[in-house]
Image (cartoon, rainbow, N blue to C red; front, side, top):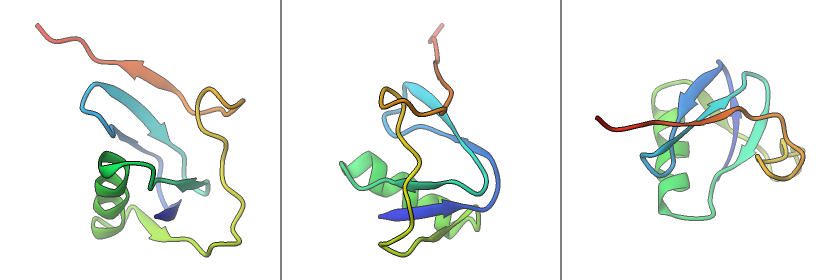
Length: 75
């Protein structure tokens, strides 16, 4: 699912790494079940809207993107 963020919000597709999704940016979150669930949760909470297919996508971390990612540590 391609989404456009309405507000800057942290989220995690795997329960380990937390990524900051930036307001005004478009993300393609449909590569796996965790991404699909996160995208649906953002839309349901009013934090994002579904984006049209022709909306340019913000590069993901590791692709020259500017998303900030941090690992969470248990214990």
